[in-house]
Length: 357
Image (cartoon, rainbow, N blue to C red; front, side, top):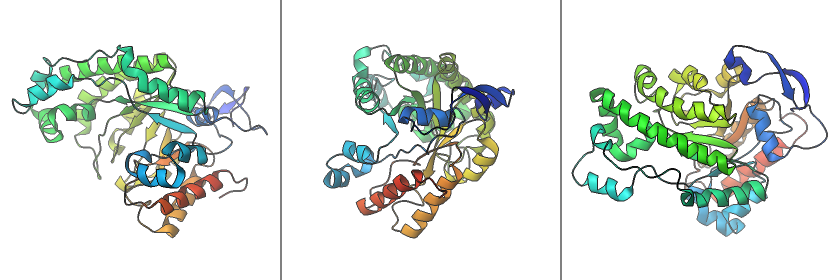
């Protein structure tokens, strides 16, 4: 656990090529950490008093959860989740203008340059985020992170993913201009979220398929990386936390993710070839993983013995740091409430045990 005494630590400093470092970390003590301290300790490369826990359960299971617990809020309180994922804020493009443009046929990159973007500084659009901060951080002490737009995923809503992938080859110069406009909008959105008091900016940008990137690493480096760097540099300049969500296999660009300065990567999808053991052995000095419970292969299939063994395996691996235990995505609606509570009961018990799992 982190401590105010200066000790050798195993953190972000390595990515600056100056490790090990001596920076203030809090040592283990009898006092339990708060949820925010616990998550921050993992992000800083320390060993927390226990593994922090979260799960994405709201999107598909609200009805059975409400029937069993009264509400999704009540489930999160019952299992003492350490984090909260906040949504809200303005959308980048005016929806009416976007729908009108789509009536004319597929939108090409050059067309987007003429599409009106919304004002990311419109404070009235952040009401839901403010309410989430009040509910989760102020009243319950949770570490709150807010979803902010990426580049590729965000603009799939404008182009359609098939067209977008085609445009990467046909119109790279035009896309570069579009991406940088989006990047500046994203930067302002992120700065507003930090001003409101969120603990981490969470950039959502799916780049991966089940076996590799959706585009070449060269294309990623030329077009995606510079656009992400705009927001990443601004967040890091404020010494704030930064996380990336990308489904699929993104092994080909891990070094670029480190270069951008991401502190956390979600979900590190094992069902797409992303090995948690490799993260633990090779990448843990650079960033933490938020994940470990795969919704494609592990939870929701009625295989309780397998579910138990996978949870135990992942928690053993993350016992000394580097892991924020979480689902790889929203738990799907084929998961029964009995299986969900089996998993959450098990995780709740295992992370609080004093002896090894």
